[in-house]
Length: 191
Image (cartoon, rainbow, N blue to C red; front, side):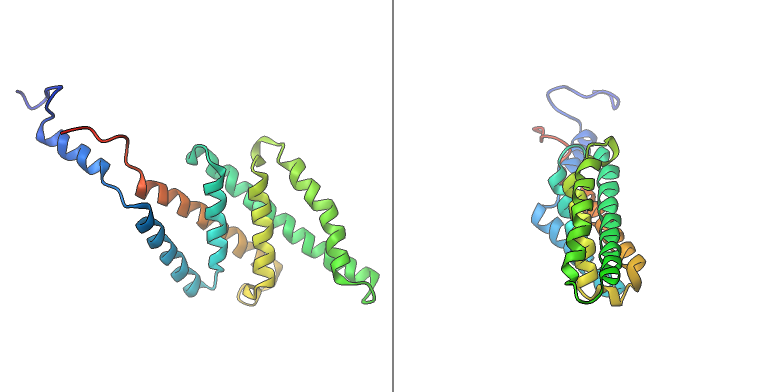
Protein backbone atom coordinates (compact mmCIF):
# COMPACT_ATOMS: atom_id res chain seq x y z
CA UNK A 1 0.00 0.00 0.00
CA UNK A 2 1.38 3.46 -0.86
CA UNK A 3 1.98 6.18 1.72
CA UNK A 4 -0.70 8.42 0.18
CA UNK A 5 -3.58 5.96 0.23
CA UNK A 6 -5.03 3.83 2.94
CA UNK A 7 -7.26 0.83 2.97
CA UNK A 8 -10.89 1.58 3.89
CA UNK A 9 -10.87 -1.40 6.25
CA UNK A 10 -7.50 -0.82 7.94
CA UNK A 11 -6.19 2.71 8.53
CA UNK A 12 -2.47 3.27 8.27
CA UNK A 13 -0.41 4.07 11.37
CA UNK A 14 -0.37 7.85 10.79
CA UNK A 15 -4.16 8.14 10.37
CA UNK A 16 -4.76 5.89 13.36
CA UNK A 17 -2.40 7.93 15.52
CA UNK A 18 -4.00 11.27 14.51
CA UNK A 19 -7.59 10.08 14.98
CA UNK A 20 -6.65 8.51 18.29
CA UNK A 21 -5.29 11.85 19.51
CA UNK A 22 -8.44 13.65 18.32
CA UNK A 23 -10.56 11.37 20.52
CA UNK A 24 -8.53 11.90 23.67
CA UNK A 25 -10.37 14.33 25.91
CA UNK A 26 -10.41 15.35 29.52
CA UNK A 27 -13.31 14.05 31.57
CA UNK A 28 -15.73 16.93 32.22
CA UNK A 29 -15.12 16.71 35.98
CA UNK A 30 -11.38 17.24 35.50
CA UNK A 31 -11.75 20.03 32.92
CA UNK A 32 -14.31 21.90 35.03
CA UNK A 33 -12.16 21.57 38.15
CA UNK A 34 -9.05 22.88 36.39
CA UNK A 35 -10.97 25.88 35.06
CA UNK A 36 -12.66 26.55 38.42
CA UNK A 37 -9.30 26.49 40.21
CA UNK A 38 -7.81 28.87 37.61
CA UNK A 39 -10.80 31.21 38.00
CA UNK A 40 -10.45 31.16 41.78
CA UNK A 41 -6.74 31.94 41.60
CA UNK A 42 -7.46 34.76 39.13
CA UNK A 43 -10.04 36.18 41.54
CA UNK A 44 -7.67 35.94 44.49
CA UNK A 45 -4.83 37.66 42.62
CA UNK A 46 -6.88 40.36 40.87
CA UNK A 47 -9.63 41.07 43.37
CA UNK A 48 -12.23 40.13 40.77
CA UNK A 49 -15.31 38.36 42.14
CA UNK A 50 -14.96 34.72 41.13
CA UNK A 51 -18.72 34.19 41.36
CA UNK A 52 -19.05 36.56 38.39
CA UNK A 53 -16.99 34.07 36.36
CA UNK A 54 -19.21 31.20 37.45
CA UNK A 55 -22.38 33.14 36.66
CA UNK A 56 -21.11 33.97 33.16
CA UNK A 57 -20.15 30.32 32.69
CA UNK A 58 -23.62 29.25 33.81
CA UNK A 59 -25.25 31.71 31.40
CA UNK A 60 -23.24 30.25 28.53
CA UNK A 61 -24.08 26.70 29.55
CA UNK A 62 -27.78 27.45 29.79
CA UNK A 63 -27.89 29.25 26.44
CA UNK A 64 -27.33 26.13 24.35
CA UNK A 65 -26.87 26.34 20.60
CA UNK A 66 -23.62 26.84 18.77
CA UNK A 67 -21.02 28.29 21.11
CA UNK A 68 -19.30 30.27 18.38
CA UNK A 69 -22.56 31.92 17.35
CA UNK A 70 -23.86 32.44 20.89
CA UNK A 71 -20.70 33.95 22.42
CA UNK A 72 -21.13 37.51 21.03
CA UNK A 73 -24.84 37.48 21.91
CA UNK A 74 -24.14 36.23 25.43
CA UNK A 75 -21.43 38.79 26.11
CA UNK A 76 -23.68 41.54 24.72
CA UNK A 77 -26.59 40.40 26.90
CA UNK A 78 -24.46 40.03 30.05
CA UNK A 79 -23.00 43.50 29.43
CA UNK A 80 -26.42 45.02 28.74
CA UNK A 81 -27.76 43.54 31.98
CA UNK A 82 -24.80 44.96 33.91
CA UNK A 83 -25.23 48.39 32.32
CA UNK A 84 -28.94 48.34 33.17
CA UNK A 85 -28.05 47.28 36.72
CA UNK A 86 -25.76 50.27 36.96
CA UNK A 87 -28.65 52.42 35.76
CA UNK A 88 -30.95 50.89 38.37
CA UNK A 89 -28.48 51.65 41.15
CA UNK A 90 -27.95 55.21 39.91
CA UNK A 91 -31.70 55.79 39.55
CA UNK A 92 -32.41 54.35 43.01
CA UNK A 93 -29.73 56.58 44.51
CA UNK A 94 -31.03 59.67 42.68
CA UNK A 95 -34.63 58.96 43.69
CA UNK A 96 -33.51 58.46 47.28
CA UNK A 97 -31.85 61.87 47.29
CA UNK A 98 -34.87 63.54 45.70
CA UNK A 99 -37.47 62.14 48.09
CA UNK A 100 -35.18 62.38 51.11
CA UNK A 101 -34.25 60.10 53.98
CA UNK A 102 -37.81 59.67 55.25
CA UNK A 103 -38.66 57.33 52.34
CA UNK A 104 -37.17 53.81 52.50
CA UNK A 105 -34.32 53.24 50.03
CA UNK A 106 -35.96 50.11 48.65
CA UNK A 107 -38.78 52.24 47.17
CA UNK A 108 -36.26 53.89 44.83
CA UNK A 109 -35.03 50.47 43.80
CA UNK A 110 -38.59 49.30 43.13
CA UNK A 111 -39.26 52.39 41.00
CA UNK A 112 -36.10 51.74 38.96
CA UNK A 113 -36.99 48.07 38.51
CA UNK A 114 -40.47 48.96 37.27
CA UNK A 115 -38.74 50.59 34.31
CA UNK A 116 -35.69 48.34 33.84
CA UNK A 117 -37.23 44.85 34.04
CA UNK A 118 -39.70 45.39 31.18
CA UNK A 119 -36.92 47.14 29.25
CA UNK A 120 -34.72 44.00 29.46
CA UNK A 121 -37.56 41.83 28.22
CA UNK A 122 -38.28 44.25 25.35
CA UNK A 123 -34.58 44.35 24.43
CA UNK A 124 -34.63 40.55 24.31
CA UNK A 125 -36.81 40.82 21.21
CA UNK A 126 -33.94 42.36 19.25
CA UNK A 127 -31.61 40.10 17.26
CA UNK A 128 -28.48 41.20 19.12
CA UNK A 129 -29.89 40.64 22.63
CA UNK A 130 -31.89 37.43 22.38
CA UNK A 131 -30.80 35.95 25.71
CA UNK A 132 -32.99 37.63 28.32
CA UNK A 133 -31.74 35.22 31.05
CA UNK A 134 -28.18 36.37 30.32
CA UNK A 135 -29.28 39.99 30.75
CA UNK A 136 -30.77 39.11 34.13
CA UNK A 137 -27.58 37.26 35.10
CA UNK A 138 -25.47 40.31 34.16
CA UNK A 139 -27.90 42.51 36.09
CA UNK A 140 -27.78 40.23 39.14
CA UNK A 141 -24.01 39.86 39.01
CA UNK A 142 -23.66 43.65 39.11
CA UNK A 143 -25.79 43.82 42.26
CA UNK A 144 -23.78 40.99 43.82
CA UNK A 145 -20.50 42.77 43.05
CA UNK A 146 -21.89 46.07 44.36
CA UNK A 147 -23.33 44.59 47.55
CA UNK A 148 -20.70 41.89 48.07
CA UNK A 149 -17.78 44.05 49.08
CA UNK A 150 -15.93 43.83 45.77
CA UNK A 151 -16.77 47.49 45.23
CA UNK A 152 -13.96 48.36 47.65
CA UNK A 153 -11.46 46.70 45.30
CA UNK A 154 -13.03 48.10 42.15
CA UNK A 155 -13.75 51.69 43.12
CA UNK A 156 -17.03 53.34 42.18
CA UNK A 157 -19.86 52.22 39.96
CA UNK A 158 -17.69 52.21 36.82
CA UNK A 159 -15.27 49.87 38.57
CA UNK A 160 -18.13 47.62 39.66
CA UNK A 161 -19.47 47.62 36.09
CA UNK A 162 -16.04 46.77 34.65
CA UNK A 163 -15.52 43.98 37.21
CA UNK A 164 -18.96 42.55 36.39
CA UNK A 165 -18.54 42.61 32.61
CA UNK A 166 -14.99 41.27 32.85
CA UNK A 167 -15.86 38.35 35.12
CA UNK A 168 -19.02 37.42 33.21
CA UNK A 169 -17.03 37.48 29.95
CA UNK A 170 -14.28 35.34 31.45
CA UNK A 171 -17.03 32.89 32.45
CA UNK A 172 -18.28 32.70 28.87
CA UNK A 173 -14.68 32.06 27.83
CA UNK A 174 -14.38 29.30 30.44
CA UNK A 175 -17.44 27.66 28.94
CA UNK A 176 -15.83 27.75 25.49
CA UNK A 177 -12.52 26.38 26.84
CA UNK A 178 -14.43 23.67 28.70
CA UNK A 179 -16.05 22.67 25.41
CA UNK A 180 -12.66 22.44 23.69
CA UNK A 181 -11.14 20.42 26.53
CA UNK A 182 -13.97 17.91 26.61
CA UNK A 183 -14.90 17.65 22.92
CA UNK A 184 -14.15 14.28 21.39
CA UNK A 185 -14.17 15.33 17.76
CA UNK A 186 -16.85 12.81 16.88
CA UNK A 187 -17.49 9.17 17.51
CA UNK A 188 -14.54 6.85 17.87
CA UNK A 189 -13.73 4.72 14.86
CA UNK A 190 -12.45 1.18 15.25
CA UNK A 191 -8.74 0.75 14.53
